[in-house]
Length: 174
Image 1 (spheres, rainbow, N blue to C red):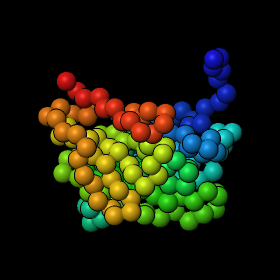
Image 2: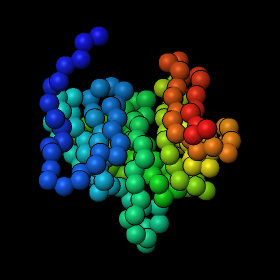
Image 3: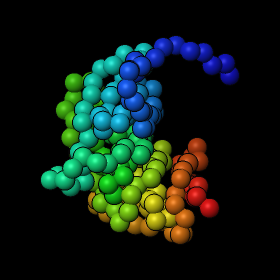
Image 4: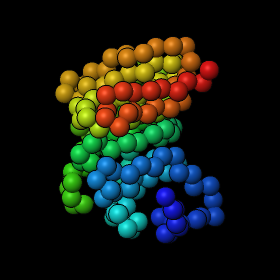
């Protein structure tokens, strides 16, 4: 494999402008980038900015003091899951076309901060995420409920899925 530079999608700025999460859609038509201001920027397959939306805090009356910790697209590329440090995972319905309306279709409130997430490619109605207290949980999009797959006392730092979508591996701080 040969890698080559194509272009910058986010221009440099004279201030700290952290990118907190980035992901490609499985159909390779969209790139999602989350910034430190809690906005998600959507780019097309050529790296051109096409859309942008603001994320929501877990507590609608609360302050926007959370950080976006991770993002991933659904297997059909129509939804975007966002893991936030304010103990919640939101799933946004984006649609498949650029002009489609965006809305929150699922949310999973958690007992501690969500640290990472992934969406198995063979399980479009299940979302796997890790939380700071060491649990790996699975959220069912049909019932809006989450259950624990595995628990330990060590912070979950990463998740990955097998190519067939049947296995999940988690990395922990210890």
